[in-house]
Length: 251
Image (cartoon, rainbow, N blue to C red; front, side, top):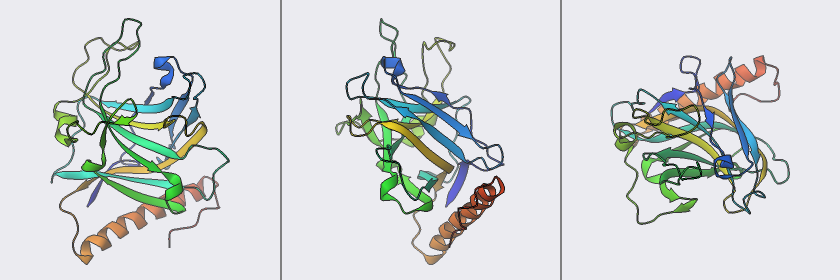
């Protein structure tokens, strides 16, 4: 079962802030723009790899205070609904990451943030079918990652630690030096060690929590298919309303 978090008129997206490689002296940029009508969000920007010699990342972060609580029964992972375009401009980045953190980055003497462990789920638009697609990631799919590399010796991600221990930022301009406990969700486009760069765009329909035991009956499959169909119908209608007549309703 999927319980929606964000991306519906009744569940609008929270405020996102950019955290790009500029915090390390880079030049990448990003934006997160929800549609007031549909709540479909566009995560886009420019991923630069020249400034940092092949490295680079662009991300948008939402910080929750009070903490974002996952619903009961116990959650099993995240479900992301997005729009996979029919084609991509040459060289456009198509690999994206959802990142969760449960550590507070410290500041170095030069004011830049220290790297901390994050738990990341990576997906590539080129590997998905065209149109409105729903993809799920179990909590075990969020890999412990440090500076873009998986840390195989780190502990597995525990979703409870996200909202019970929480995560936050310290020392950024305009933020309190000792913020209360918060948890953080980020959408990221990174260079993957200079394998992608340039202008990027990700159209996000909704984000939800997968709850309950894994479906083993036909009813579970019908429920998932029904939710995906209704989400697709709503998004298709809303896109048509704002002038995009090229997207068909899901089959």
